[in-house]
Length: 165
Image (tube, rainbow, N blue to C red; front, side, top):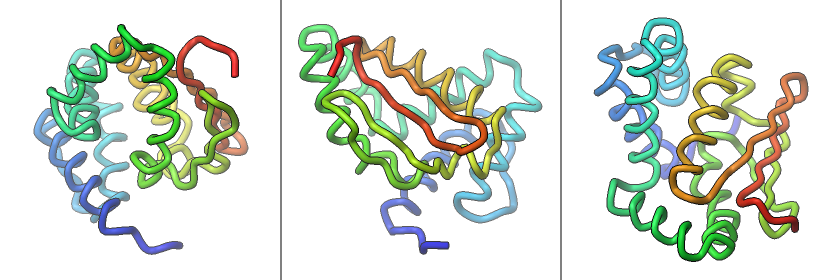
């Protein structure tokens, strides 16, 4: 297994801190494995409202705080195609620490050939902690993102916006 980058370690630390702050439970496992364990615990033990609150904390941690989230929301409303393209270009750098390799397949689309999060977390975590909250959160930011995971190959197709490539 490839060694985690300093950026990946820093981001996982930020995500864990945000999630544990809401869930109240911290795994003894280190790094990424600990984060997956915490999310699995949350899926099994938190109410839907608590999970939404935890998801919100994690998204804000990933997107560098509430100011950037509101900026993206305004940009998405005023310039939807430009914002969708910006996310398409920056997602591989911003999220590969969670998913593994991400590459572009079109102007507004990406592919994760073997999603690390899905493989390590399982189908329930993929669908309930990743796909559902991502759809909800990016729609709220006025840049719809559709994720289409494959539960056997762990491949995932990402599509920003509503336009055809």
